[in-house]
Length: 70
Image (tube, rainbow, N blue to C red; front, side, top):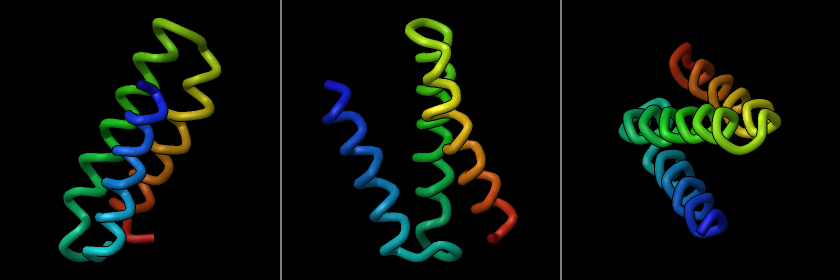
């Protein structure tokens, strides 16, 4: 399930980039990155703390980058 889940998230981010960020894909990028952050926080709380650093922090940095337009 994890591979499939991560594949869907990657597909969502690729679709956002294809649609254009900044531009029409920006809202999709916000949503997908927020989902990744939430999943990373949940994984860190319930499975392994390292998930916070491997998944949530990079997604949060990417979300901030999209928000400020970097």
